[in-house]
Length: 107
Length: 149
Image 1: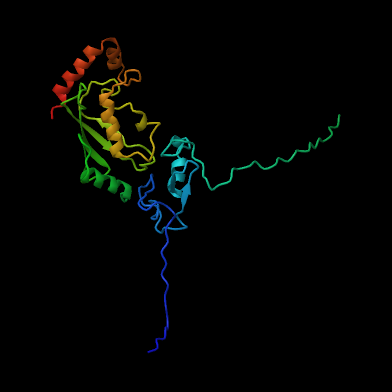
Image 2: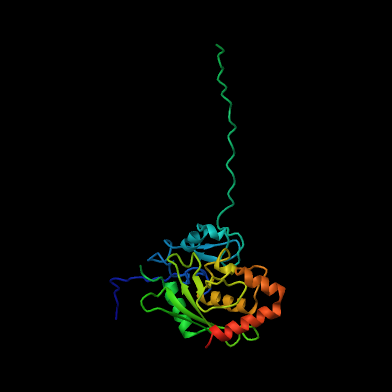
């Protein structure tokens, strides 16, 4: 008997590379789910890993860090929160200002 | 505004796995408003008492802490006449990783460890420093009178 495949549909599953049962410490939704505001998990609602190795939904941690009272600390360990993936911001080389001294004409 | 999932989850867990000596029940008509009771810790002047509190989760919870107040009169250097509580995690040390459950445990711990050096009720704190035994006796008496189970 010969079988001819006329059509096939691939189904893929994805998950963040994170421990199974873990939830975001801010919204308490699973990492594979979204923050409390988003509808679709994945690239639109990514995770952010801190230098302290605590991770959160990016939207959750940003809205915490925007609070003045957060003092920009990690909610879990209270260390200053810095994103691990981000390169340290290096200050752009300053342009030396050339003084354009306009000659004052004495009257 | 819809109730965030986190609040629903916290409420469900408070009901399913209550903390010993603590209860928190949301109002049917406002699920952000809870009736709370805390039992006075053993070997504290509040032992044997059941204290009522009210807890409210503001719109921006968990970015801002819950608002909590004692409704039962209590003689404690860190709790004032209006029932307001002086506790770092309810103010500047709040973190969204904390929950209703952990905050109520902190309050119960505060009953077991009054701190007259960081007072909210100045008269009580002063009394506590001048004559601790007398202050503790007053706290016991208030507990018997006002915090009946």
